[in-house]
Image (cartoon, rainbow over all chains, first blue to last red; front, side, top):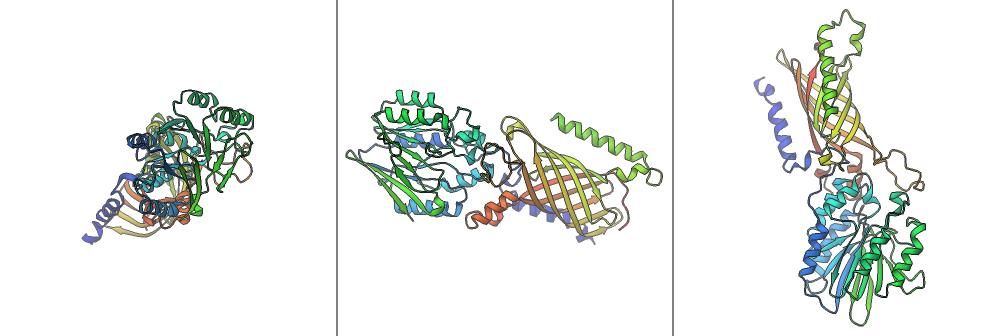
Length: 271
Length: 197
């Protein structure tokens, strides 16, 4: 009788202790904003700045990992074991880390990707903007629109998820994009954004202006996207600008880009 | 926070009126809830508060709660939500004249969050089936236990949500079974005299 009466509290305590080992187990809402880190894009860019740029360099692109945490884990292991610090400089993510823009999904992505020995820079996807996802992205990753350089290459990364703002003209931010291009000191430009202008989720009212901005910039080399889940490399507007769509990691595919003074090689990779 | 205060005052008035109403004399007695609740966490709010009704046989419970997540843990404005929770209570035992423990409460809750940032029906600017889920609605499953001593009670709940379960099913290796569970704890103030089991 004594044992039974005092059984409840120790039982409850031990259950709670085993679950509260990290305070992640007290969750206030599926919509809560509690990312595990801050400014991981900015931290990655700081690491990239520390690298000694080579004339010939490579980077990897992976994308749309939102339902592919298993594949993400094996991708991280694959990259860490296959590539040395000399063979690739960094990775970029084409967007859609989450399905619901939920805090727990962002944190699951972070848990996996922090194990990569290379810096990773990511752009925001359409799913990532759902619920409070846009706020979580800004806290966890940093600004939505930003750029960084490696050697003589400027990477301009921005939010192109027009449908999520009901095509109100704010995404992509074309005036910001033009400013970024104008202030770029490097001789080569690569763009990264989730939604490509070839899709119906890109604001139709902004499409022509956007493609013109890219085409009229003589330094444009490549525009990288995710979203449609298939590997496509094309020049859809016959204006000299190549558009690369990166497949979803769920297909166990990614892309390797190798840049040398002579050319740019783009390879679809499987693992 | 003033919403929480308002609801707590409302519940306090419930409890005061319960003191003066007798089960034998008032038709209103049936409508007064069996208890008022204050819960911490559990995915229905940082704090949530509400009322709970229990069937005469003490096995079925229904609770209606208002939950609040302050702006600090949300996107610059608080998250207000309401939850309807149903529970089946079993393995109930009495220990002495005043202590009762319900060892197993299995619950299901439906939570709706207010605000234009979230949707229940897919907004018109999306094609049909663009997103297969609502962001304003979450459903949860809970398992817990509850203790009662005279007019007070204490409970814990280990729970999961629909989105977590789907996430786990899609990536079972990376998302471990342990990962999908969370914990909520609550205190209960019983408004009605206990009926003997």
